[in-house]
Image (cartoon, rainbow, N blue to C red; front, side, top):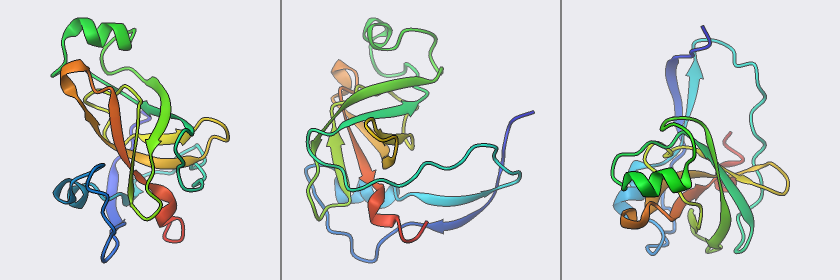
Length: 157
């Protein structure tokens, strides 16, 4: 009853020549992960998140997503994500690196498969600062993550 379907893709938010910070996201991965604006088949009853300022090192953030256990050991998943796989979780952490001219930044939120595309929210003011793209170090559960800084697209949204 509450399910929404994508009617069409309105726009891919892809800059012509993005400055790349290769330590955060390799260029080939970044090229596959640009955010898109979608038109849904029905109105959504919640307001969109406000786009925040550029992420800064040390800033407190949270990822809101639906992790599930695929590649990490079940005991690591259970330690980090109480509850069933696929349920909404808030994954808190801090920005580790946010190069000023890069489109990507990284953080120490513990993530898992199923969280790609999730919002990265500034804990202090509730604004959207990023879109989660990937976790790193899967052997220990994805204890660090990388995302795309959404302030770069504020004028296009």
